[in-house]
Image: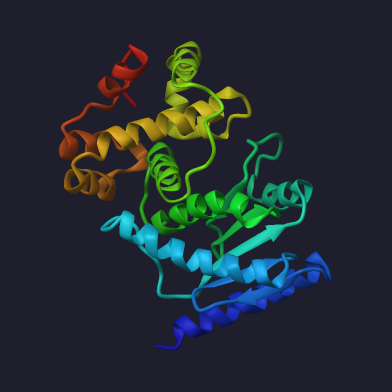
Length: 261
């Protein structure tokens, strides 16, 4: 049909408009599967396009039966020159204003879905691309935030592992036990803790990563769980049905207190 090429043409037109707004240093590069709008040197922008194409294939393979991509349009990455520009841009997608969590990148699933990050060398951008492309491939599912982020963090660790962790496992365990209480863990289940601007932000990602890593041992059962998990109950019913797990009890093994969504 003509819908796919027509949508790509609309994406291209919007990006050309955004390119003019961002200034003369920005260039739009287009590959078979992706657009990159940035002030990166042409060779680096081309390398980024190639990395995005390879990453999409690897995410779809790693999350087989869960991840999906649209036949319409191409993946879009906008690389801002500075953190100020980046936060000013993403701020319009936070309707309440005020403070929001620091981040290296984001998948914006509004209107024309696209990935945004801040300019750096390609090696620094790669983990963010993997993480955000994973979100893009999960956008068709009504996942609770903890499951969405846990899948993205584990995929990032698998396909683009970073440097040594900031804290040891022992330090993180102590931080978790000190932080999580009744109110905080319900924020985790609802997804609000991922928006925190304190240690709860990092601890939320770490807890989500641990839970997903524990749950995905039986891939067939885990896939069925993910496909049925719903943000309305934080995935509790699907976890019980397909994994035989009570989410509150699963947390008890980590935090020594059960908190059911």
